[in-house]
Length: 473
Image 1: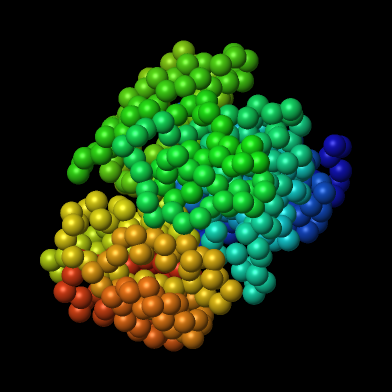
Image 2 (image 1 turned 135 degrees about the vertical axis):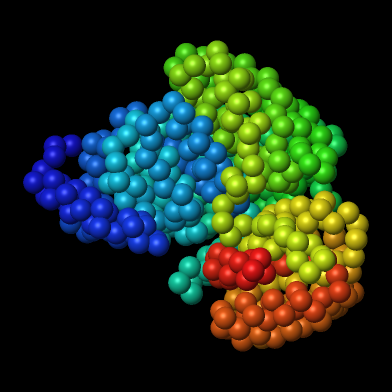
């Protein structure tokens, strides 16, 4: 597209706004992009993309693991390319701000999507024309956006639109998750689809409930579950888990580290052929879920590495030096507090709650623990159903149920359902006030005679960060 006077004005004002706001605590990550799009229009975002990005863009989406996976991809690509980036991003405005921030070889953008109207994934795909879209997983989560409830099918559709109309490029998909597999089940005609997954026998998860086939809505049959809905599955309609192109073939977990082996063949754009990967990695003991994030990011890097002959050495060099600092703020963390272990962090869906619980139980070694469970809100019964399956499977010694979002009444209703299931629980109502909830969670933690697991729903990262920081002090 020709660079019109309007485009030049929009870009200049956007860049000037960015320079003025980037030192604020928020980094002004949305407003400069808003200014550009307000002046030049969303339909002309592609002009900015072509002007600022030399090689192409990578978009990372999913329910869990987006930020960690994006961070790893950024770290890896930064070794070889000049990049521009945006992390923990859910809007086209933040993505546009990242484009304004600098010109680069490659753009790497996390793009969380909760609904079509606000995420505009079809527009982002059309305007950015990504060379690669990476899917982590898709689970039921907080699907109310500005008070409007969206169905799980609409949520999946929103994620699908980010790659649906791609006519070329690479789509990287979690083969173990039926929802991500279904998204790109028919993309092979247009794009290179690369599936990643597990091929191990010693990792299994029994906390899963019924999982419906995304193709026909009948229950899937699993021969093995790795984690929640991720596993080896098939349906009578013919839908089934594809064989991964790249997979984890060995996992050994100790108190201090996780040893894994990654094997497979991945298409590399520079050689225009598949390159072999066989590498042993030593990771921090940060949970099974993050092994999926490692696999997704390693796959993405291998696709675009300019030195494919050195891919195994480069992957080992990066991942063998990882620390817990790779995990984004607000996520799950275990701390020592008053002679007990306290694990806390957001768990807005069954996947995240289960990952948090498994990591905590690995740390406390079968010792008694109290679960301070922060509930979903009204119209989030699907999330509660997934949470309940996880809680019943782990069966904590004691559960304190607190409201996680606005409604105290629905939290009480969820508590009553947990009592009927025979769980040892009590209800602790706290009104919808951030400061009160933070202080009451701290009081409950102080009074508990057990190790304490605090997770569930909450208002994004704000509550979790404050509780964590005050306990640390």
